[in-house]
Image 1 (cartoon, helix red, strand yellow):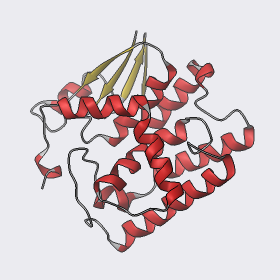
Image 2: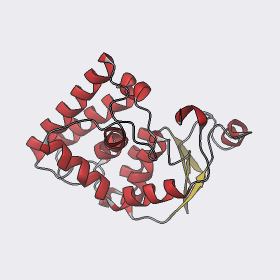
Image 3: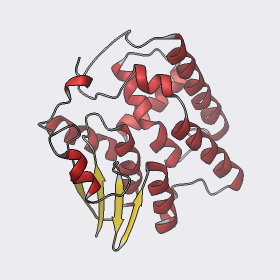
Length: 213
């Protein structure tokens, strides 16, 4: 049985990404949620993951950590799930924008942290965060025009896993987007694994004070 080790679903954008990929494969799996910033949480994570960070994936005696590495592993483990586009050009494009998200958009992450239970219209709009928003929407617009939607490369892919937490941020902070980007956001929010994630987040008993201020 596959097991995915996650942080709080309310806040952990990096945990959301491989969870969506794993759920999309249709393979059975177990979840372990380690509440972040609770007493002893670092020890609990280190006992299972050498990096001391979540998420991580167990597959038998294999342990894979880092969100994008887990997604890549799942794409190879379950090729029938189509987690990367079949066309090699589209696949290279999808990998490029996924790596861009993995490595960048630091201002957006810092100024608009993920919190699925809050509405914070107008907050976080520093110049750097606005520049990140402009780049994200440019990526979405380009992909939707090239590949026709409803997801970035037509069907659901790892690229959508990487940008799904940004969709939640745009909703939390009431970021205005055009109709095409709004349609993409609607598709992400209607994706069944995303609905399941939100339902589980609502049921969590934990909060992190620094993200609730």
